[in-house]
Image (cartoon, rainbow, N blue to C red; front, side, top):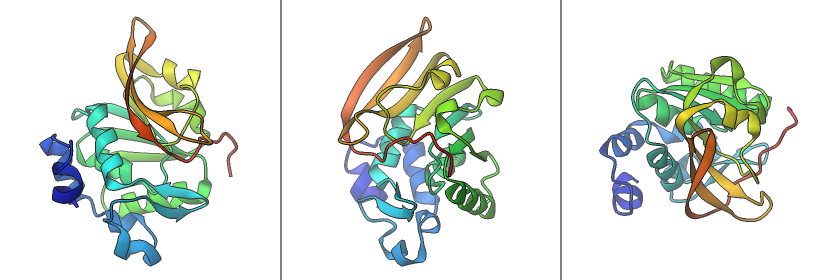
Length: 202
Protein backbone atom coordinates (compact mmCIF):
# COMPACT_ATOMS: atom_id res chain seq x y z
CA UNK A 1 0.00 0.00 0.00
CA UNK A 2 2.65 2.52 1.05
CA UNK A 3 4.92 2.01 -1.97
CA UNK A 4 2.25 1.63 -4.66
CA UNK A 5 -0.44 4.06 -3.47
CA UNK A 6 1.45 6.70 -1.50
CA UNK A 7 5.20 6.98 -2.16
CA UNK A 8 4.66 6.51 -5.90
CA UNK A 9 2.34 9.53 -5.93
CA UNK A 10 2.94 12.76 -4.04
CA UNK A 11 3.21 11.61 -0.43
CA UNK A 12 6.79 12.59 0.37
CA UNK A 13 6.86 13.02 4.15
CA UNK A 14 8.82 10.04 5.51
CA UNK A 15 7.13 10.28 8.91
CA UNK A 16 3.70 9.97 7.34
CA UNK A 17 4.76 7.05 5.15
CA UNK A 18 6.09 5.29 8.26
CA UNK A 19 2.86 5.96 10.17
CA UNK A 20 0.73 4.66 7.31
CA UNK A 21 2.84 1.51 7.24
CA UNK A 22 2.66 1.04 11.03
CA UNK A 23 -1.05 1.63 11.78
CA UNK A 24 -3.03 -1.59 11.20
CA UNK A 25 -5.77 -0.31 8.89
CA UNK A 26 -7.57 -3.67 8.87
CA UNK A 27 -8.44 -3.21 12.55
CA UNK A 28 -10.62 -0.20 11.64
CA UNK A 29 -12.94 -1.99 9.20
CA UNK A 30 -15.47 -4.76 9.74
CA UNK A 31 -14.60 -8.44 9.20
CA UNK A 32 -16.42 -8.51 5.86
CA UNK A 33 -14.11 -5.88 4.41
CA UNK A 34 -10.77 -6.73 6.02
CA UNK A 35 -9.47 -8.40 2.85
CA UNK A 36 -9.94 -4.99 1.15
CA UNK A 37 -8.57 -2.87 4.00
CA UNK A 38 -5.41 -1.82 2.13
CA UNK A 39 -7.05 -1.33 -1.29
CA UNK A 40 -6.97 2.08 -3.00
CA UNK A 41 -10.57 3.07 -2.33
CA UNK A 42 -12.90 3.95 0.56
CA UNK A 43 -14.84 1.26 2.42
CA UNK A 44 -18.16 1.29 4.30
CA UNK A 45 -17.97 1.25 8.11
CA UNK A 46 -21.70 1.32 8.85
CA UNK A 47 -24.26 4.07 9.46
CA UNK A 48 -23.79 5.30 5.86
CA UNK A 49 -20.21 6.33 6.69
CA UNK A 50 -16.90 5.33 5.12
CA UNK A 51 -13.21 5.02 5.89
CA UNK A 52 -11.35 7.14 3.34
CA UNK A 53 -8.94 5.56 0.88
CA UNK A 54 -5.36 5.37 2.18
CA UNK A 55 -4.11 8.02 -0.24
CA UNK A 56 -6.63 10.63 0.96
CA UNK A 57 -5.79 9.91 4.61
CA UNK A 58 -2.07 10.32 3.85
CA UNK A 59 -2.61 13.44 1.74
CA UNK A 60 -4.78 15.19 4.34
CA UNK A 61 -2.23 14.30 7.02
CA UNK A 62 0.60 15.69 4.92
CA UNK A 63 -1.31 18.90 4.23
CA UNK A 64 -2.01 19.25 7.95
CA UNK A 65 1.75 19.23 8.69
CA UNK A 66 1.35 17.72 12.17
CA UNK A 67 4.23 18.23 14.57
CA UNK A 68 4.91 16.20 17.73
CA UNK A 69 3.16 17.52 20.83
CA UNK A 70 0.67 19.63 18.86
CA UNK A 71 -3.02 19.54 19.75
CA UNK A 72 -5.18 18.62 16.77
CA UNK A 73 -8.96 18.60 16.55
CA UNK A 74 -10.58 16.04 14.26
CA UNK A 75 -14.20 16.41 13.19
CA UNK A 76 -15.66 13.08 12.09
CA UNK A 77 -13.93 10.23 13.93
CA UNK A 78 -15.56 7.58 11.77
CA UNK A 79 -13.57 4.37 12.16
CA UNK A 80 -10.82 6.07 14.17
CA UNK A 81 -8.15 5.36 11.55
CA UNK A 82 -7.22 8.98 10.84
CA UNK A 83 -6.95 9.64 14.58
CA UNK A 84 -4.65 6.63 14.93
CA UNK A 85 -2.36 7.90 12.17
CA UNK A 86 -2.15 11.30 13.83
CA UNK A 87 -1.56 9.81 17.29
CA UNK A 88 1.21 7.65 15.84
CA UNK A 89 2.88 10.89 14.71
CA UNK A 90 3.02 12.06 18.32
CA UNK A 91 0.24 14.63 18.40
CA UNK A 92 -2.61 14.84 20.90
CA UNK A 93 -5.82 14.20 18.95
CA UNK A 94 -9.25 15.30 20.11
CA UNK A 95 -11.76 13.63 17.80
CA UNK A 96 -15.50 14.33 17.68
CA UNK A 97 -18.04 11.89 16.21
CA UNK A 98 -21.77 12.57 15.95
CA UNK A 99 -22.84 8.90 15.62
CA UNK A 100 -22.67 7.25 19.02
CA UNK A 101 -22.05 3.71 17.78
CA UNK A 102 -19.10 4.79 15.65
CA UNK A 103 -17.65 6.91 18.46
CA UNK A 104 -17.80 4.00 20.90
CA UNK A 105 -16.36 1.51 18.42
CA UNK A 106 -13.51 3.83 17.41
CA UNK A 107 -12.70 4.62 21.03
CA UNK A 108 -12.50 0.91 21.83
CA UNK A 109 -10.22 0.07 18.89
CA UNK A 110 -7.91 3.00 19.60
CA UNK A 111 -7.65 1.89 23.24
CA UNK A 112 -6.96 -1.73 22.26
CA UNK A 113 -4.14 -0.59 19.98
CA UNK A 114 -2.64 1.64 22.65
CA UNK A 115 -3.25 5.01 21.02
CA UNK A 116 -3.73 6.83 24.32
CA UNK A 117 -3.06 10.23 22.71
CA UNK A 118 -6.30 9.92 20.71
CA UNK A 119 -9.42 11.07 22.60
CA UNK A 120 -12.93 10.52 21.23
CA UNK A 121 -16.12 12.37 22.15
CA UNK A 122 -19.68 11.66 21.00
CA UNK A 123 -20.96 15.12 20.12
CA UNK A 124 -21.93 17.53 17.35
CA UNK A 125 -18.72 18.14 15.43
CA UNK A 126 -19.79 21.57 14.21
CA UNK A 127 -19.35 22.76 17.81
CA UNK A 128 -15.74 21.56 17.96
CA UNK A 129 -14.29 20.73 21.39
CA UNK A 130 -14.41 24.06 23.21
CA UNK A 131 -12.91 22.98 26.53
CA UNK A 132 -9.72 21.75 24.82
CA UNK A 133 -9.20 24.79 22.57
CA UNK A 134 -7.12 26.36 21.19
CA UNK A 135 -5.87 23.82 18.67
CA UNK A 136 -2.78 23.98 16.50
CA UNK A 137 -4.66 22.40 13.61
CA UNK A 138 -8.02 20.93 12.63
CA UNK A 139 -8.83 18.12 10.23
CA UNK A 140 -12.44 17.78 9.07
CA UNK A 141 -13.23 14.44 7.46
CA UNK A 142 -16.75 15.24 6.28
CA UNK A 143 -18.02 17.66 3.65
CA UNK A 144 -19.19 21.14 4.60
CA UNK A 145 -20.08 24.24 2.61
CA UNK A 146 -18.16 26.43 5.06
CA UNK A 147 -15.94 26.15 8.10
CA UNK A 148 -18.26 26.13 11.12
CA UNK A 149 -17.63 29.39 13.03
CA UNK A 150 -17.22 27.57 16.37
CA UNK A 151 -14.40 25.50 14.88
CA UNK A 152 -12.61 28.45 13.29
CA UNK A 153 -12.61 30.26 16.63
CA UNK A 154 -10.97 27.26 18.29
CA UNK A 155 -7.91 27.37 15.99
CA UNK A 156 -4.92 29.37 17.20
CA UNK A 157 -3.49 32.21 15.13
CA UNK A 158 -1.35 30.68 12.39
CA UNK A 159 -3.18 27.36 12.76
CA UNK A 160 -4.30 25.17 9.88
CA UNK A 161 -7.58 23.56 8.86
CA UNK A 162 -7.70 20.78 6.26
CA UNK A 163 -11.16 19.93 4.98
CA UNK A 164 -13.36 19.06 1.97
CA UNK A 165 -15.08 22.36 1.25
CA UNK A 166 -18.13 22.69 -1.00
CA UNK A 167 -21.58 21.29 -1.70
CA UNK A 168 -21.98 18.26 0.61
CA UNK A 169 -24.35 16.57 -1.84
CA UNK A 170 -21.96 16.56 -4.81
CA UNK A 171 -18.20 17.09 -4.98
CA UNK A 172 -15.97 19.26 -2.83
CA UNK A 173 -12.49 20.76 -3.00
CA UNK A 174 -9.89 19.61 -0.52
CA UNK A 175 -8.60 22.84 1.01
CA UNK A 176 -5.99 24.05 3.46
CA UNK A 177 -7.14 27.10 5.40
CA UNK A 178 -4.61 29.05 7.44
CA UNK A 179 -5.74 31.50 10.13
CA UNK A 180 -3.86 34.77 9.66
CA UNK A 181 -4.79 37.95 11.50
CA UNK A 182 -7.96 36.19 12.55
CA UNK A 183 -9.06 35.58 8.95
CA UNK A 184 -9.10 32.47 6.73
CA UNK A 185 -6.61 32.17 3.87
CA UNK A 186 -7.52 29.30 1.57
CA UNK A 187 -5.39 27.04 -0.64
CA UNK A 188 -7.28 24.66 -2.94
CA UNK A 189 -5.73 21.26 -3.57
CA UNK A 190 -7.94 18.83 -5.51
CA UNK A 191 -11.50 17.65 -6.10
CA UNK A 192 -12.82 15.07 -3.62
CA UNK A 193 -16.07 13.54 -2.44
CA UNK A 194 -16.83 13.03 1.24
CA UNK A 195 -19.93 12.13 3.23
CA UNK A 196 -21.69 15.30 4.50
CA UNK A 197 -21.26 16.79 7.95
CA UNK A 198 -24.43 16.35 10.00
CA UNK A 199 -25.58 18.19 13.09
CA UNK A 200 -28.00 15.82 14.78
CA UNK A 201 -26.55 13.34 17.26
CA UNK A 202 -27.63 9.72 16.77
